Image 1 (cartoon, rainbow, N blue to C red):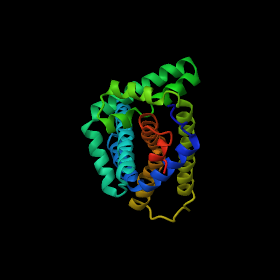
Image 2 (image 1 turned 90 degrees about the horizontal axis):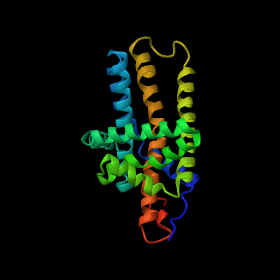
Image 3 (image 1 turned 90 degrees about the vertical axis):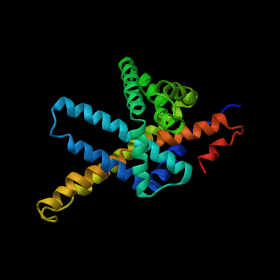
Length: 239
C-alpha cells in the first residue's frame, strides 16, 4: 500500500502546535546553547567557529529529543529540556557525526545545483530524530532517513521551507521588539545586558528551532504512514 502524501501545510501546522506546547523545553535548550556560545567568545577565532558548529549540532539534536518526548508523552515542562540535553550528550558522537555528514552531503548537492541540495537536505532531515529515537548509528540513521523520505521529499522540503519562513518572521519580530524599546527604558548596566545579550538571543534561537521540530514530526509521521498497516496511519501523529 502506498503511504499517504505528507502535506506541507499539515506538517507545518502540527509542528507549530508541538513547538508551542514544548516551548519551555526549547527555551531551556536555547539558553544552554547560548550560554556555551558566550563562554567560547574569548577563545581563538578558529576554535570559536568549531565550537559554534558543534554546539549548533548538539542544540539541533536536543530539539529533536525534546520534540520526540512531546510526541510520545506530551512532556512540556522545563525539566524536559534538561532531559533532552542529557539524552543528546550521551549520544554526542553520533549526533555530531550525523551533523557533519549531512552538512557535507548538502554542500555537495548544492555545489551541483540548488535543487539537488534541497533534495538532499529533505532526504536527510529526519536523520537526527532517527538516531535519537531508534538508537541508530550515524550511517544507519542517514540510510534510514533516505529510505523513509523516499516519495515524500517534496512534502518534507516544502514543509521545512514554510517552517523556515515562520522561524525567520518570529526571529525578526523578536529583534524588532527589542529595537523598539526606547532609550532609557531599561536601566544601564546589568539589566540592559540581560535583555540584549541574554533574553533576545535565546528567544531568537528558540524561534529557529522550528525546522528541527518539523524534521522530528516528519519522521514520526513517515514511520506511521510507511510502517503501519492502514492508509490513515498519519493520524497517529496528525491528530
